[in-house]
Amino acid sequence: MKKIRFLLLLSLFYVNPVFAEPIMIKDEGAITVERATTAEIEALFVQYGFEDYHKVRSKFPRIFLKHLPTDWKEVAENDAKHRTFIRILLPLVLKINEEILAERKIVEDLKDAYFKNGSLNEKELALLEEKAAKYEVFTHLKGDSRVRSLLRNTLVNIDVMPPSIMIATAAIYTDWGNSRLAREANSLYLDEVWYSDEGIVPADDPEGGYRYKTYDSLEDCIRERALKINTHVNYDYLRAARNLSRKIHRPPYGEQLAAKMLSDSNYRNISGLIDYTFSFYKLNRTDYFPELRDVE
Image (cartoon, rainbow, N blue to C red; front, side):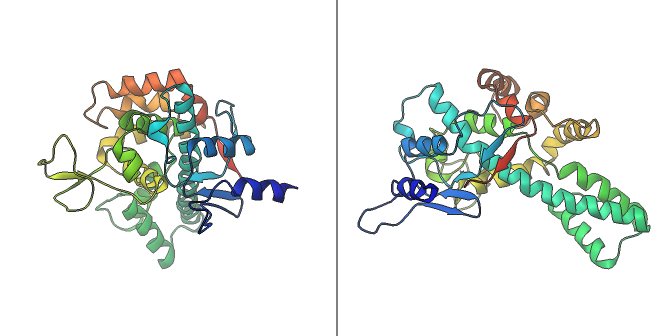
């Protein structure tokens, strides 16, 4: 019966009845949506019990949209639409956080091995150097001092992003997904590329020498954004505050870190805008140890 229900739902997701090409793929406990309308996404959320994101310590279904709904611009602007936007992004942020935690576990294991054995072997050292380089952790120290420095500072940078921060900033920078960049380029955070022919020319500054970066999917955009926050000097204070939360065994809450986002954009009072979005949509509840669950 479950299989029949799934096939009926799947029949809603065809690009063209002639080619009958499915645009929703279910595999290994997850559903990847290539293309769908807002109504179809809402039906999918209801099907898998994803009608609320407010529950503390919740597990959310692995429903991953590659793009915003095809009719997103035409959907009436209201709180319901905004809450759908939140539910679209939340599983994607949690997926990226899973990836980050997997990398963090590698470095934690290297740290345990170092303090257990008193050193790292050649393979372990190469792996540590690789992770440190990816997360832009550098030191001129040598020998054991270098290893300890890389272990300590790389663990500060490799950590999860509060979903509330990732979602609130995406909502602010894209006007809840209504911007051309979000709909056509999967760009949620106004990331720029300079002196390049790639990307979208800004409508209000066509001669500015920069373009807005385009992404193959929303997931790619969120992944790059998380890496930027975990590496760029502008977010040093945010990472330090997050690390302090970990030391006292608390999840990093977006409200706590919003004040560290002052360098995030040219928006006036960006911290205040983030804080308001947190409060109105109760986004802080998405930071209470959220997890993903397989869809059946």
